[in-house]
Length: 154
Image (tube, one colour):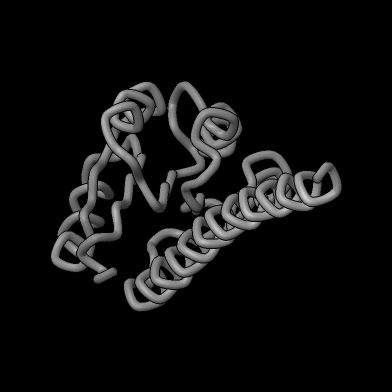
């Protein structure tokens, strides 16, 4: 899959950050943005995303709280947190509660973020492939068990 097929949702209450992110990455990836957690949930309902990047400090909710709230319904996307504040508690919470893959400081380093988006997509793809292979293995196992039972009966 080409990088252009990587779907990213970026949530930030600061419009200039959304514009800067889109300007930096729209030629490389399929980028959608949202200015709030509420708007992000609506966008998530409309399409599938591989990577979700959220600002930590937003008016009604934090990035971690947002990730925690979508975890059950949207467990597949890889979650990344961006923040302008160095808060070790936020980092710990991000990893433990929001299952965040990476934590970045603002302003972001474009090359570092690009590299980590690529790595995050690799993780997404490997998890998806693993899930599919596990499902196939379970299916084949069931068929084998059925054949073994048939052989034992006859």
